[in-house]
Amino acid sequence: MSGPVARLAGLQVGPAQSEPSGDFGLIGLAVMGQNLILNAADHGFTVVAFNRTVSKVDRFLENEAKGKSIVGAHSIEEFCSKLKKPRRMMLLVMAGPAVDDFIEKLLPYCDKGDIIIDGGNSHYPDSNRRTRYLAEKGIRFVGTGVSGGEEGARYGPSLMPGGNEEAWPYIKDVFQSIAAKSDGEPCCDWVGDEGAGHYVKMVHNGIEYGDMQLICEAYDIMKRGLGMSYQEMGEEFDKWNKGVLDSFLIEITRDVLKFSDDDGKPLVEKILDSAGQKGTGKWTAINALDLGMPVTLIGEAVFARCLSSIKEERTRASKVLSGPKPSFTGDRATFLKNLEQGLYASKIISYAQGFMLMQTAAKQYGWKLNKPSIALMWRGGCIIRSVFLKDITAAYRAEPDLENLLFNDFFNKAIHEAQDGWRDVVSYAVKAGIPMPAFSTALAFFDGYRTKDLPANLLQAQRDYFGAHTFIIKPEYANDKYKSGEHIHVNWTGRGGNVSASTYNA
Ligand code: NBP
Image 1 (cartoon, rainbow, N blue to C red):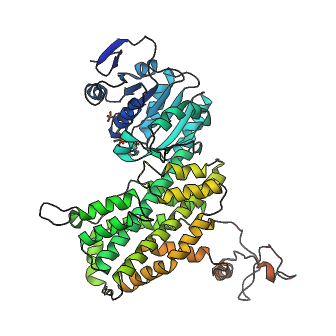
Image 2: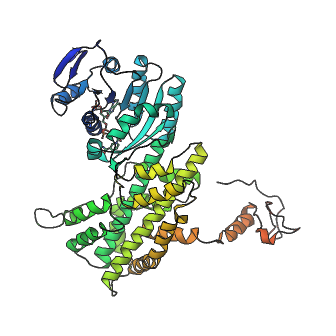
Image 3: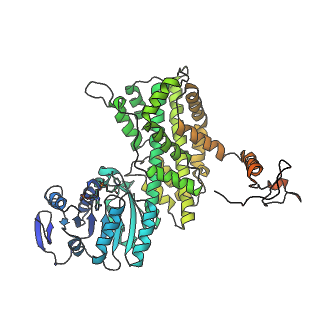
């Protein structure tokens, strides 16, 4: 059935001009949209559904939506007419121009105060722009991160809404009802202004890249460094899933390692070692470079995927470049304990770096970011959900202005306890010629971060030598010749002039 006729999943409920019954509207009937609609309907909301390809609306109503409080619309006008005011309308369509197209199509039928929510994986600058553009028209825009894939959308995703804060009281009930719950608390709270919701989702995805890379490195050293079988590796991950690393990604890794193909061989062994990526990890790394933040672990995780994808070149290189052969002679149980601790310590660094990035972004972009809520939102429903995030939530709840996660007593103690084992694992990997870029960069960051005097003094001297870029004297050496805080240029060679270059930070 088509045309402007309202229906309640298979039941006709009267003409379109009757009182609007829709609590919430959703456009985009692909995997995420359909599941989120079903989730909202299960929580007692009447949902109005629309899709660009209108035939999908009828197909949905006749199948998955049958018997539920889901109403179909066959045009944008009908969609808007069926929603109670202020309208709460969510787009779950492919990120990019499709979102702007739908916004333009909705506008003629919107009233001031209506709310348009974009739940796709949009890049945060687009959400900044859309918040401002729609605010000028009296429409409240929300850009929300949605995580948890198909199952999350259906039974409880992690939701990270940001944008025009005036919208929050109107959408809070729907969002917190359909979101995942962790210890009874919804994994959804207001994140911050403009594109902050999509920004936090971007960093979430970057952290997901990091967590996955760390697990892959642990697998590689178990397999090539210790010669473990898939069954043994699966059992080790099972053990880890009962301790500090208890998380969704460790759990699925256990299952993947234990999964055999029809011929009895582990399926994972047959999968081409060339990783794909959709870009959110890269966005995080680029933004970290733009903001001058050392988010090294996510950067390495993105580069590790890039290196994996040049498979043919690596195959040629493997024939001409040789290295040591792994030969493990130590105690395997101790090494595995160290590996678990090393992964845990690297993960602490990765999350510390992620929060450093988010707090710098908040300052730079003028957002108020709700740090304890971010950790809470990641605790359940999403891919990086873990027991570990409970401890991060607790750390930020106790000290919302905590400068760095590593200054929190719990994490400070944890990283010191893990340190020796972490170093053993990285040392063995270096000696055995097995790459552990994420473990190694995390350790290098830890050592750099805890060092008061880094060799950047020499670097500044080099820059001043070849480019007259100037340097600042350490306060304890300030005197009449070298004044404290001044940009100083020295004629290192006795040749050339005394003119210095402009000073700027890049
Ligand atoms: P897709 O990302 O595959 O998008 C499909 C939807 O976008 C359909 O409704 C389709 O309409 C519509 N669409 C497309 Br494609 N191009 C369009 C255009 N030019 N104009 C209007 N509509 C257009 O769906 P999804 O996997 O459900 O994801 C939806 C959003 O949620 C995406 O932004 C995605 O990145 C994000 N997300 C996905 C996941 C996940 O696990 N899949 C998780 C978290 C977030 P049609 O039916 O007419 O082709």
